[in-house]
Length: 385
Length: 235
Ligand SMILES: Nc1ncnc2c1ncn2[C@@H]1O[C@H](COP(=O)(O)OP(=O)(O)OP(=O)(O)O)[C@@H](O)[C@H]1O
Ligand SMILES: [Mg+2]
Image (cartoon, rainbow over all chains, first blue to last red; front, side, top):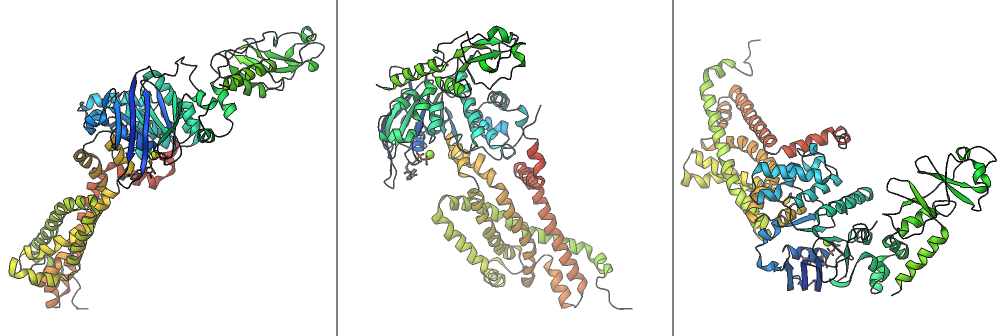
């Protein structure tokens, strides 16, 4: 479910605007621990840069150096061209949204006032701040009825949404997110991730997102920075590049298993060749299609929606196809889904073929096993490089 | 049977104005020290929460004073503050209340979850604003719990002052005991319990009003399930 081909936004190279720049940044804590060592990294404007790596590799430290909750002991961090060390911390922080794992909501304030925290700090009047908070609650998909509750009256997922709304309240250009979704169950996490991508497509914030979950990194990141313990950058790349060409064994191991299959998520499915001669309407006479050379035919209803596959040998001598039991099918949305979805769809059908549908679920055509085979070969070829 | 009744209501009726006066005196001598102790405990507790090295010695000193028998403290104080004065009685009470309130303030501040404090910092609170707007409000339930204990025990501790001639309702105990006459003793006990109960009730109400979020939380825990069910709903 990557996004690179959806928005058509190319991963920015080094020529784009960089909202946040780490310039040879190091952090040595007073006890001698070197948490970050010579980190150089650009977080391009309007993109999600994910910092990922094993526990203790300096992700949180790196993030906190941006808003000066931790001060770097070496190098500089530039925010929109300005060295953060020259800005007074409270002022700096009011211009940077920050979301953490446990949401960090104020237990003694109602949801609406939690969201309005930074506007209050900035001196907005109460009415305007609250109106803004209500707007944001809606934006993150929360019911207005929750506004008057206290945080403990919300589920973990709802609290996390409030945390995101609060970070966005004063419309900061930059969001820092430190494992914001790792404390909720996988289903809620997936929906929060989708929500973040949806929000980001509307808001285009510059986001630095920390996680130790490589799948989350690949799903959310425009660019992914893999850090190794000691806070050294192992690789910085787009998710597709990362999966295709891990820089070294550490990254390869960190990416985990099924790297090849996962990489297919980043190969668009819209280049697949379709066959339109394998589709028959359910109203067709069985006899009229019995002569086909194909072992399987896709049956569609009056509006072109898929009903399933019928085998040639099951076709009766008379009557329409409505009387023929249809075998299960798999479908993918051609203009949106990846080669991985197409492969998955094929594996769900006894015919081994995938149905390509449009956004409304109408069959556009069939991707045969042969065509998938060729596409997989092309994808594998792209991995050499 | 012609025996002496346990409570002689006519005595209470006749001495009502004096009894009320003693109750008022008792209340003042109990509450002023608690108020003073609270004012002292706030900065000391804040300092103790911030600097661990400061906390232990402070609590140590206060606890030592707390452990001294009150009579001994009175004897030391009398040359300075006088016999049978309010001050003599109130000074040890200040320490007793502090012994409860300083830890309450420190515990209250420690009850602020770390992620809440961190997120306040991250949103750009200045330290003072964070203290006043986030940390102290969240500490309130724990501080108020300490305040309830301090207030109730202060109200009953005042009676010890009767030994040095100024004990509020405690005077009724001495009086009844000396005359082998139970009515004042019983009236005194009932009134002390009543005053303490009333003060406690007021503090509970204050807590409801000051921290609706924590009161609601307790209520929600008591009711448990039904509230959780309607979470999803909403028009
Ligand atoms: N205040 C501190 N004092 C000393 N060492 C610290 C401090 N904070 C972090 N460290 C150390 O710095 C290193 C990096 O810590 P950091 O919290 O940045 O890691 P992380 O990548 O966020 O880890 P996690 O995934 O577990 O959150 C660790 O070795 C940690 O023990
Ligand atoms: Mg961390």
